[in-house]
Length: 124
Image (cartoon, rainbow, N blue to C red; front, side, top):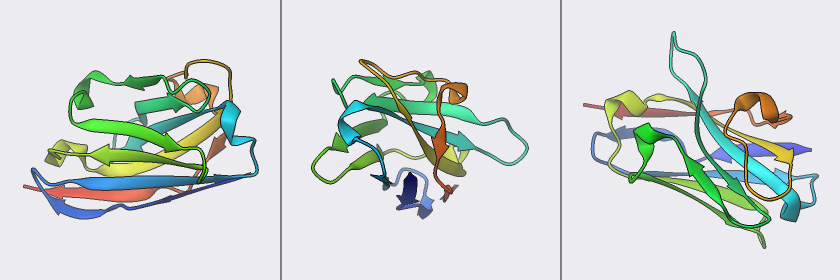
């Protein structure tokens, strides 16, 4: 089981980035994939999640309307499109996976497998 994130980097405020999470070792069609982030000195927080079974999504209030998560089941990859980035979005972003039915749980404790993280830095 492996999750590999990519797509992080340095961007100016107002800019965009797209994170990818390539998943292997699972039957991709029955997963919940979560996106989490952790800024220096802060606790890890849930950002978004998606069900690869029914496509349902969840977004935390801080990023609603700016971030979009999607999945490409043919490529076993989940994406997090981040627009209108703000300096407070600066963090290490992680994707995580768990086998699940319909819907997706937004809490980190429900996820069993984690990627290595990718740094997102938004300059003001």
